[in-house]
Amino acid sequence: MNLGISPKSRVSRLFRSPSFRALAALALVIAIGCVFNAEGTFFRWHTHRDMLRHISVFGILACGMTLVIITSGIDLAVGSVLGLSAVLFSLFSLQLGWPAWLAVPTCLTAGAACGLTSGGLIARFKIQPFIATLAMMVFARGLAKWVSGGRKISTAVQLADGSFEYREAPGVFRILGSKLFGGNIAVVTLIFLACALVCYVLLARLRLGRQLFAIGGNEEAARLSGVPVSAAKLLAYGLCGLLSAAAGICHAVQEQQGDPEAGAGYELTAIAIVVIGGTSMLGGKGGMGLTLNGAMAIGYLEKILSLNAVGEATRLMLTGLIIVGAVLFQKHRK
Image (tube, rainbow, N blue to C red; front, side, top):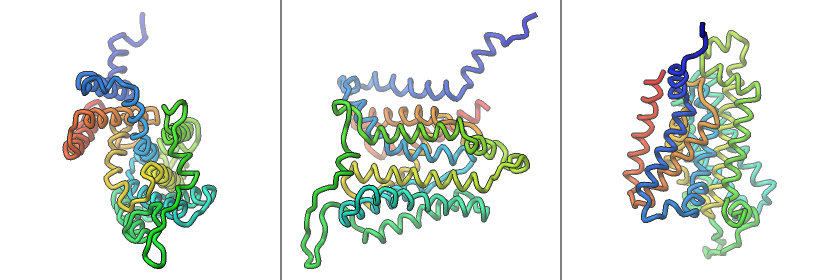
């Protein structure tokens, strides 16, 4: 008597697997690129290289968003924290002349503080994640505008007499903005992969990761099992803020300036990456491998639309439809 799983059941499980669905979404996007290849541009290496560099900032945001969504939460403030960090890093490095060893940790600390504040409101005062992070989104954006005076922070420094002095970008900008391996891989891309690796280890190998999954699966059961729910949530949002600050530093390096409006709407793309990857919006299920797949899928989709001269308005509408479709597909498969 064969008590094993039938081939039909194995196939059914395969198709229901989040990993399979994430890979299928990526394969579909690449297939679309092969068809709408913009006269062969899609098949050239520089297209894929530029896609990786472009999606890296969004990917770093998505790493932090994954940690939060696994707990059945959400962080709408990641784009504003990115903008604040970009402004602070540009101000410290470009205009005040701070060394990298001081400017980088200060910006990361500011981002982590924003995340910890949101996490504290959620874990300690039981405010809904949507409301708490919405408040932080508005506050961080206002703080970025206040710090910058509503202007972009660049190498042009205004002197007391009203004239401008143009300064050379410091070495940290040149290092983080450079490309390695014959100009094929951007340093920002390597930072994204390093962030993804750290988050993977946290989720798959450390106790905190198991606690985050438990909270997302059933918060009350996790609490009764001895999981420090408040502390785990606080750490999840704190790490999300820290990663948002890292993305802000990378964004400032790419743009060679700190714009207080930077990151507006980036939370939408970060959420889309996580959801398309297969991490459940209900919490308790997901992983960094899925988020990497989602980042590649969104990156290629945006690149294909750009190559075919599709306008920004259409791109935003498509992103919104994709998020809804991905959530409905997850719900259908449960």
